[in-house]
Length: 457
Ligand code: CTP
Image (cartoon, rainbow, N blue to C red; front, side):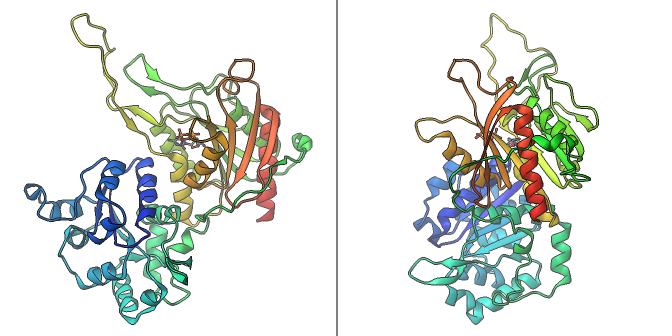
């Protein structure tokens, strides 16, 4: 998808760098258009480096490419974050004096504004009228979050967290529900508590609370005979995707599928209705589940998004290739003595888990989403730190984290093994839960935790 990210001149511009990351990590192409004022907060070089594209707000740059027409036309979605009071006024007034405002006038796709300003500005009659005008034209304007502002003041005016803006943007693109919702309700004023059209569909996109000390999982030994998940529709992905290079070769990963299959077995034993979508695995799929076999990340994405629409629980245990070859050779790639060795160019795959989270928001669906994380530490951070960041980035409810790589005896610690050692992190800040033992025992603990959360509503 082609996304235009407009950045207004406010201190919250730095948060848009994280938003940009979320878009690019989900596989989208992003053109950043910062206002001149915003470059006092975040420079053009940052946007160019993060987006991988040249950045300008000048209509007279690259005039031959008619950017002020082309960018708006080609955009599938425009997100303006932070949207200042000035930008909202210009958009409502139809101004066209820089690349961002001309692009907004040319836009034919959905437009989302994420305002950030001081409370007085947000509540000023001018802003109230401008927001009402924009909303009445079908433009989507998020309500700002309430909290600490730039100075000592507190109130409505904070830029919503990047994850919330991302989820709202994906909801907007995916979203019939959202469109109907907007159409059905009169355009609310910014100061009205009812003005939460978009926020209402992203209730889970909140900043996580810092977790407390880990606790051991409660014993889940009785699962084989319980109906803890009776009638619950559980979708599980498993195995390691394969990205073809030519008819005989592929890029793969070490996932055996054992943990995903153990989860399917544990969920079945707990009475769930299980759908297992799996890439190649070293173990057979369990009897009793609806099975769908796929090979590539893009196939996994289509199958998962379709099945997630009717799932109460989604568990993403598959090891998904983050990249795929840009071109698949129709014939076997040959080695030739008189030619250079081939170079494989990779392109990024979409992040399926992030999309499942966004779809849940779009459909206002009640669904528990569990991600898995294979982590390694490095000089810049340990595995736990990276896992916590991944939990926030993905926006899933639970993240089952295992540290991968060589174990103490030198052999592989997780991949292909029959045992596992995990820590389960929660986005809502509940204490991390530790679990270890056979992959089935770990699966039983995960199922137990899911059942507890479903029971708690
Ligand atoms: N995942 C996904 N789509 C991708 C990559 C990963 O849905 N393109 C899911 C996996 O199924 C898993 C979770 O995201 O539930 C974390 O996967 P992991 O490989 O640990 O993380 P990445 O997103 O690939 O991040 P990184 O490689 O940077 O650690």
